[in-house]
Image (cartoon, rainbow, N blue to C red; front, side, top):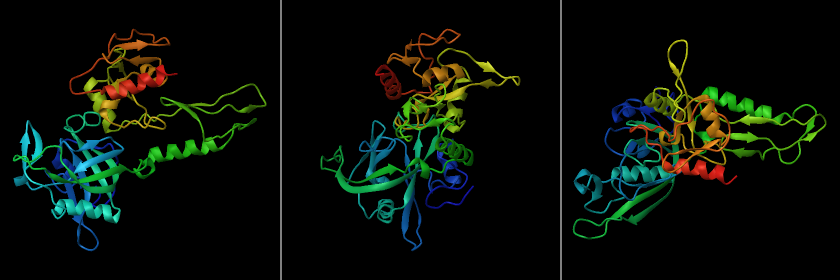
Length: 348
């Protein structure tokens, strides 16, 4: 485990999950078990922010995965709750140590680690734990007026921060994934023997995880290079989903067992991770599927309606598909991703 510092902590990659805040602190991702903004000393001794936690924050917060609007901090005496939601008694100050630290990170261009908790936005929250979701940069700060006034009706001014997620190549991929990505890039740079590239080779056609290279000028019988662009990564997010379903496919009910008696299943992203979809690697965007249904999802052979009905569009599955997607109370699949997948394929 690496020491606490600005940026990534050595040995911990985005997607790592921790049962409670105390584990987050022990792994040097955050300095505190309660506060939202984590602080440490910069080279000149002044406090800067190295991490924030999103976990049921203020009503003025907004999480859109790639971008975040984050409300600053206040002392405990300045806070109260209405139906479990935090509110403020008085305006926030840029001089408050936590806000000053995050403001200083903005001014100095330091990246900030983002940890999401289970009480955050339902589109991105992990299942009953905390998840490290990578590095973000504070892109803007402002003084804003909160949606809710003080108890006496006076307006509340808040310290507001905009954050943007750094590109994937700065999110510290694992060594294995980096090697695979390098090999794929090298292979794509070498044209197939007997063919001449036609058009822009960097403009592949992408559909829900399947990449089809552009048509090529043929000298021999027609060939086409097709690549499924998804790494089956058993990261913490996927392990969490597979554990909750005990390896049972949510679409067809198949539960494959290996010779050791352990179930085999795959974590399938509903809204794919890569371009042009840019889906997030989070539990509400992942299904536990057998290999056949995983491919079926990726090629649009079935889609899912808002009432969770499974609509088969093509293909033969070999087993009967459930009338509705099987769900579990703790695994809250979000309709935003289901709608995106359905609309993507129905528009083609």
